[in-house]
Length: 167
Image 1: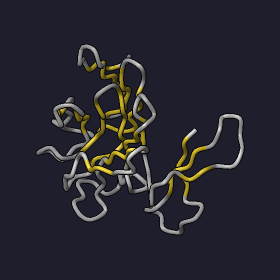
Image 2: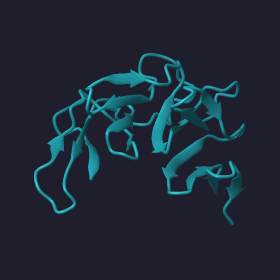
Image 3: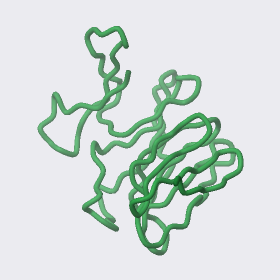
Image 4: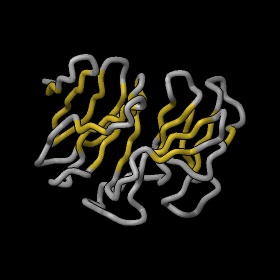
């Protein structure tokens, strides 16, 4: 199990990622200087992650040094790559197949919407177009991502690209 912790940090923005066996034991810190939200590649050899420990829901439309990007860490080569490099918030990375999904407020309305980054083409694509409210709390499943927007629950289906409100 991977978890985030500030057990060796006093700064609210900095934390580390740790692994612990499902059977328990002593947690092992991942070899990253800091980490936040994260998602393993399907083969477990890489990790998509945010460096900032927390989500800035109260920092709407923030642009600046604490705006988070999505990074990939390769456990074999020990290399780290920034895949978003945008002044907006790019948070909640979710790795599925050859895509990394995340939410960002990079559009003209500065609302959190769902995006995907294709690892082969290196292209970023906007998948939702909510203009009134931000997407919140996305969660990756085998066939879809579920998220909240404006008090409603939605799903984004990987196969069809269809967005449906759950009733």
